[in-house]
Image 1: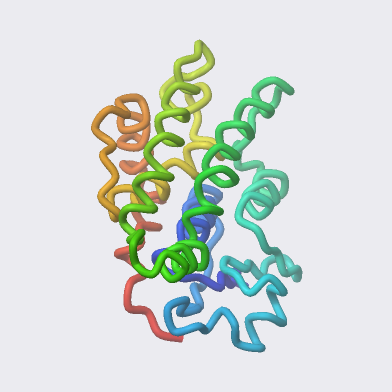
Image 2 (image 1 turned 30 degrees about the vertical axis):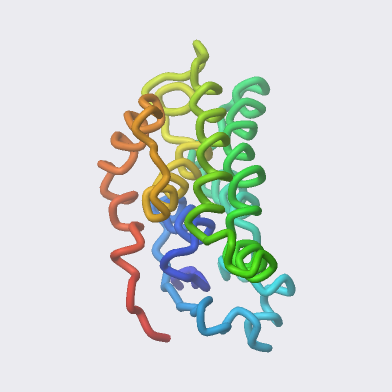
Length: 212
């Protein structure tokens, strides 16, 4: 039986999990949860994800939430190689992934952005907020890649959790007009990752317009 992913096509967190599922070779059925329409606040979504978020993954008879926790579960149960075997490598991979998932994503999600726009009376636009938040944090991520442990990908020569986070974040940055031209390492790595068929298959455009 396929895994079931409760998903929203433009959610960077859901995009991460789609990439991870593809790389792990785990077929899944995507069930859209339309965030702009407020479907994430519906009782049925709250019942499976008390935070009222996406993604939620129904797999192996379990229901999992939080994208990085899901990715680590897939790594442990499918030997996906998303985290290195050595302690330092795991710590560095997590640090890179967390720099995106915990330092950029939380303050750029739709609920925060909407509140900023409303609280400022429109003086701060969504685009301006995204740009001022993302640009320096992505620059810091770029600096973190200036390390001997960086290889073909963010850590070494195998796609890992950090790469799975990087691709959706750059997609989101471009969407909001963030200037990413100076992020040479990020762009080079993302281009390699995006060329992998399983990653290309997870792109938001492939899931746009789905209906339950």
